[in-house]
Image 1 (spheres, rainbow, N blue to C red):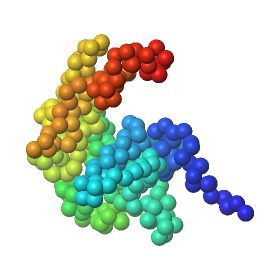
Image 2: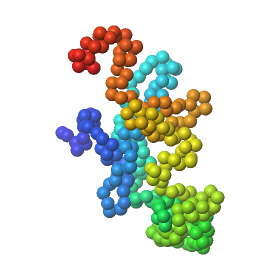
Image 3: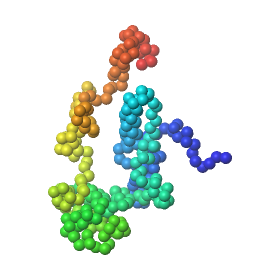
Image 4: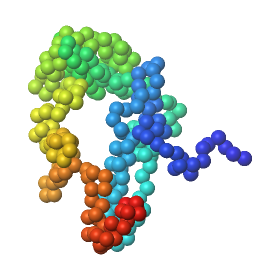
Length: 276
């Protein structure tokens, strides 16, 4: 007698793209605004997250090989990788039967925590403690809100989240992005906030440039290409972006001659037979 569960082994044969992974992992069920369809996270998260876990797995296997002298097979599923990003929701559901709600940019346990439109652009503000909420209230000229019974404590603020967001939205809307950052930022109230940068603002951003994250590498056909730099900064063995990815078949002859020891005639024969 067959149960309603899909056969586990059948999943490995299903073709996938990023959106398939985000849906199959449950990630899309967390994402989106109330009353709207599930939303894919921007960027190919499913592809990249699986790759990151794969790289971590390789490093772990190398350490194990050094200790044991044995290699091992590595298995990283894109569904597994994205499922691990569901925060505590699998545990919460198993314990209480509670499912997450779509809340857009908001947070299910913090208010205000959202994107707000200033006169000249968008920014985000994140307040996840009573102290930060009082600092925000003082900074926007409404210190009395910090002692208002409606907003005293996380639970109360969640119950009156729409009211709080309306107050914060109105205040932000009267200012420019730069003004809000100056008032709320590290030199002001110390409330977590940031502009919603666009790509054109990031490719020459001073912080990313200083961190070596903006690299320009020559390409034989396209000229200079801008690519992200090395994310991990290591003091003794720093990495570097020296070249772009190879063209299709660019290193075929090198691999066949230097690693496999094939002669020029053998390579020519393989090419004539369309093996390579």
